[in-house]
Image (cartoon, rainbow, N blue to C red; front, top):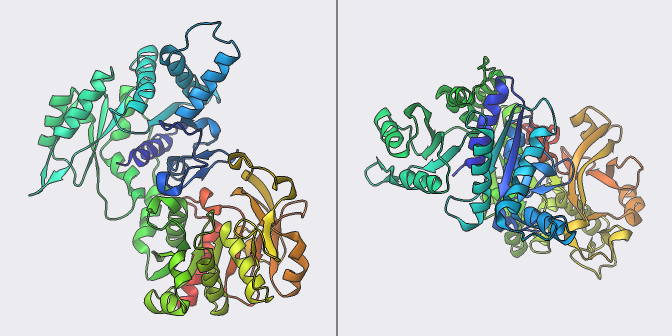
Length: 524
């Protein structure tokens, strides 16, 4: 439906008017966080600076707004019930019967208000409630929203409801689903103040008036989130032209300030100026679901904007490369790849296909970018195909390897609680002189986010570097490898961290930018 993009776009517009905005996502699932969920179930896991493993919508918030994001900005049913049960076990409720109302709803409200109060300069908190109206698991969150609107007053809290306007045969738009959706909201005790209608085309005036009549919403508060043939980053401008932000501010009694959309307009101008195309092969494990690598795909798009080139994503399931004898026929024959990117992931499936892709990129001088697992794949390839260790591997995939070039830190060997043993969140990386990573960031000390358990094994550092592999960045104490680079190669680089999480349409990640520039120049 696009609730995350709609919420993020509204946040961007309010920021453009000088307001300090905070974003919150309420997820109805009982998991404590998204960290142990399969990408096929829930898309990618977005990691914040403080190491929270969250819903991918927080990635949208980060790309569209300047709102600081942390563990507090992601609220799940699992977190709420866990907190309430712990309080009950501690006797904090003084023997009272603990119920959904008021105890669960009070916990939800307190978490939302905590985000609002963490900075006295905060002006607006935008809370996105996941799921669909009518879902049983969303009811506590909607009830908490109803209570907040009642307690704060309608001028201080309003409801923006995103709903579907489907198109049937003949191009007719049907408003009945929206009418029923709003009715369900009203039965929950919430009267929407603003409607954002997800539709294939812009709603005409008569359709908007009809929707307003049947939903008890003012006609000038009915907006269209229609299909765009450019990019989702045009949506803030589309909403601005429809005066969404003006209506929201008026209803909340906030003085309207002049909107400064220069950065968004400049971004769309760069989009229009793109010339040529590079084909980037994404060799990964979860190719069937686009959202599994959402931030990676967005970061590649951002890099294309800065490099004035269109980036075409070629999704290649690494298992497919495992099954073929000649990788050349796939990567250079069928697909005509200009660059290879191997993203993060867990588990053994498809690993050998990734190693084949890395070896092909290394020997054929094709730009290669490895992220997290993608860097480890570079090291495994180097061990197998340069140093001749046929069994070189990670202990994640092969416990019996005689050359475990990737392995667990010693203190993690016996840990079984996979949800809490990874290097998570922001940490410092120190780039070595004369490296591509230093050229990209233009500063020695780099702060990026991690999400992994396995590391480059220092046992093999001397043999790796002695045979030519360049260790391009380390942790400040020099104990852990953060980046490796191929020698005598146009652009072959892998990092243990995840630079995609900090990329924005108005400011591409330095490594993604240089990777796309290398693919573009190599193609020329």
